[in-house]
Length: 36
Image (cartoon, rainbow, N blue to C red):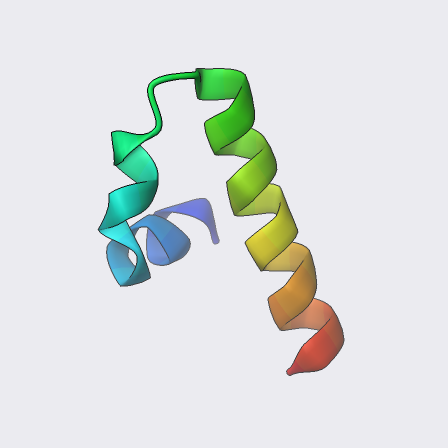
């Protein structure tokens, strides 16, 4: 699902800190699963 999220929101790749980038993707993934 990570690849699909990056395709939808490519600006995530602007985040230089990879750990923060992963947390952002995980948060969006959780929100999509929880909220629809």
